[in-house]
Amino acid sequence: MVKPIRYKTIEWVGGLDGQLRLIDQTLLPGECRVVTCEEIEPLWEAIRNLRVRGAPAIGVATAYGVVLGIRKAPTTATLFEKLGEACDYLSRCRPTAVNLFWALDRMKRVAESVRTMPVDAIKARLLAEAQAIRDEDAATCWAIGQAGQHLIQEGAGVLTHCNAGGLATAEYGTALAIMYAAREAGRRFLVYADETRPLLQGARLTAWELAQAGIDVTVICDNMAGLLMRQGKVSLVVTGADRIARNGDTANKIGTYSVAVLARAHNVPFYVAAPLSTFDLATADGTAIPIEERPADEISKGFGRVTVPEGVACYNPAFDVTPANLIEGIITEKGIIRPVTQEVIEQFFQDGTCKAKEKG
Ligand code: MRU
Image (cartoon, rainbow, N blue to C red; front, side, top):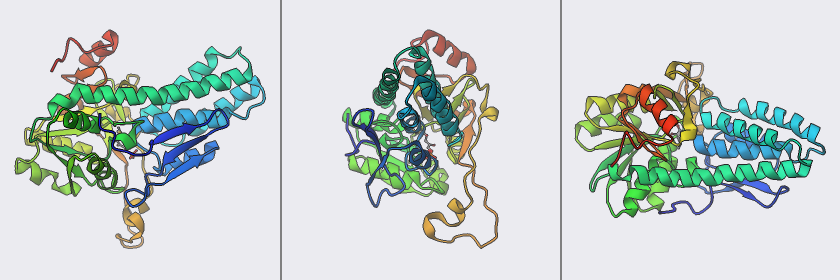
């Protein structure tokens, strides 16, 4: 499949004494700079300030963060102490993307399973697990692309919100993997990228990725989606997800819910693309999903320019929840979950496949 990004979004270089390298996404599209993290604190800062972002990429970065947190422990006892501290610290970084907590649970389980091994062997096992999480994410995103690419017809107009591309994952992306796969299959189509206020992930990141891959992309302001749909320019909406509750309610970047409502009003199918690691079956519905609230100055002084009078309040929730009934289907690495109901999701997780629900 097309590989749009020249550098790896997240890469561990070297052995246990190596370093984690990340593309600093806050600098894109002006500059593509790689930053290195050798301690857990700079990684925490990188996740918190969206240098690395997007639910699956946050999961991968978190797994490596655990390695950074434990790698200097001299004994097994200190390693497990550091592991507890690292998990606690990282869990306070960003609250909404469930992949962060999923990765922490997986790293903790692996550590427990090798507790009786020599301390260096435990460290090596944890690094191997973080690498496996990274590699699996790339393979998963590729499979999501294959599962959903038929939804993009020749000449389609596809709207997406935020960035659910290679920058938001280990490779390829989720919503954007579908576009890369459809392009690879020879179809031509136009993507409308919502600019995605306040941090402009759509304008800065999605447009950057798609343009490099040779996919036709046009950036629109978030408040233009309704007009485009009314003009008949949008035949499909695909977004990513940060957390999907057991009933299918889906948290994603703020503004996704508005796009889903518009899509329903204009009879445009609205799909979510996400790996199974983004499902949170312990959360019954969207009301229980924690929504991150970010600093007001992301709105009032976005990118350095004062755009709100001094002293005026700004409210800045980073995510919203799209109710399951507005979602046509959820495209996963195992196929498309459709219709999006609790019953179908539970059945899907029991079977480990969606063969009964969707083909083609
Ligand atoms: O605040 P961000 O940039 O981390 O938000 C990212 C999103 O909302 C993405 O759409 C989501 O994480 C899916 S990424 C495949």
